[in-house]
Length: 129
Image 1 (tube, rainbow, N blue to C red):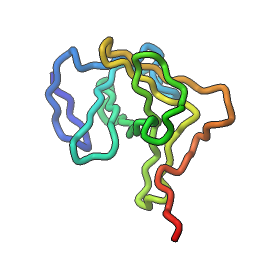
Image 2 (cartoon, rainbow, N blue to C red):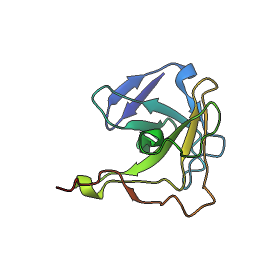
Image 3 (tube, rainbow, N blue to C red):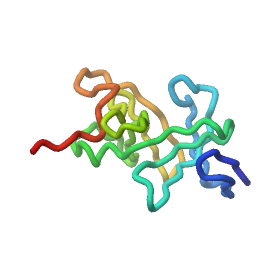
Image 4 (cartoon, rainbow, N blue to C red):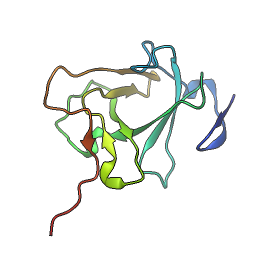
C-alpha cells in the first residue's frame, strides 16, 4: 500500500503497520486508520491518517516529561503537539493523551478527569541563568 504525505512524500507500507483507532481522535472521529511515523532525526512521532493523508498529528512521548503520568498497561502514551515556528510557543496536550498498543496495533484517546494536566503545556522551557 502507498500513502502520499505532505511531510514525508510517498510512503510504502504493509497492512500490518496500520494502527486502528475505533473511536478516532477528538474532532476527527471519522478517521480510524493511521500510520505512526518516526524518523531518526526527528524529535516527534507523526500520526498520519491513512483515510485523509493531509491529516497528521505530531506526537511526543509523555514519559520523557513525566514518568508518573497515567499509564495503560502495554500502551505507549503520547501527547498531541501544537507546533509553532517559535520553540517557546510549542505546546503539548497533556489533558487528552493518545495511547497506542503496538502489538495489537490499536490506539485510543482519553480525556483525563483531573486538572493536574493542562491542554497546552509548554514543551520547551527556556533555561534560567
